[in-house]
Length: 159
Image (tube, one colour):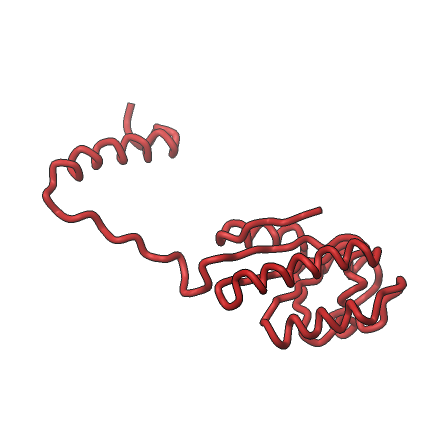
């Protein structure tokens, strides 16, 4: 069987095994691990998918606690979809606490918290980017944004 006919995973496993023996016999010092990026050591992405004030309060309080604990050593992103997206709208179609919206603004301006709105949800509601608070980013699919952040090392928090 040629290597081109092996499934990719088997080929990679065989290559890794072949080079492992050569690496262990070498006297070279092990390579230093390099950070994945120059960002903070802690990364977290929050799901925001409900509009109820108690739920939003809990999410915002958790973000505040993370900021208090890690100060500048944390990168925080909030991805909103479904009913949670109303918190990020200039003119929400559901009853949203003005205090919560002000906290969101303050978190973005003072701490660099990134807020992302789900384009699918916006499309369903009939909203465009102009309907969102000015600092809100829009991604086509909110769940995909969460997945991509996880792939970059972000811990996913949902409740």
